[in-house]
Image (cartoon, rainbow, N blue to C red; front, top):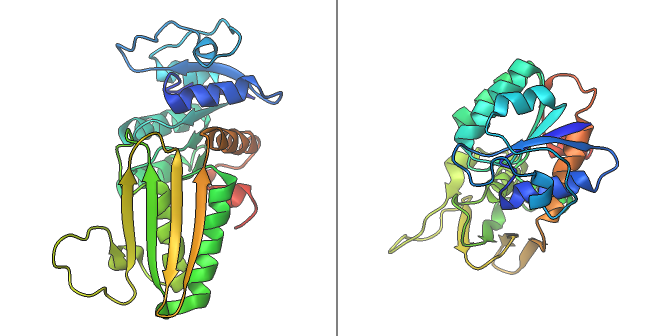
Length: 266
């Protein structure tokens, strides 16, 4: 499979390039960077610490989609929406790991998926996706006597909060309780807040250092507390999961898929 990477010179982009270069099931179709990037014209494989491929980084995303069987996107919401439209136009599969997508952004991805295959996940780690399944199950079993709090920590450079994975965990807990997350979500506490509202799902965000990603879902009652935790030691887990998802798209019917589909959970 010929796979392209948009935003290939970033930290995640380089990891994805390396993952492809070390795979016997995929080849690097190319990569893009925004206009003005100092990396334009360079070989993305060399940037990722691999052997030269002779492929040059370009700014023309449309050309990359034309040259690829599938494209992986870990960029920013505005760019991802544009890339989804290109995927639909060229019938190129798209794997999306971008976080911070709005409901409108997600709707545009699902519209594009009517004409191509799109896989979207807040986190491509297999461990995190197991955590999502466990969170839904535990929330369903424990019920309203347990308060739910979600704590996440990431590196100092992350620009969105709570993380997409934290929100996905909140969604999983809400599904388990058969409630709408937006009506029970509590994301900010400051000053005299009053007592905790029964049924709320709380979020807490930490930022600092080079933390790749840590997520904990706490279920707390008057008598006991259950904690489910996942800690990523390397971005390689995200790249490996994204490549697995991208290879899975080959031969699939058009549609919008998640890691739950790929791992057989749904």
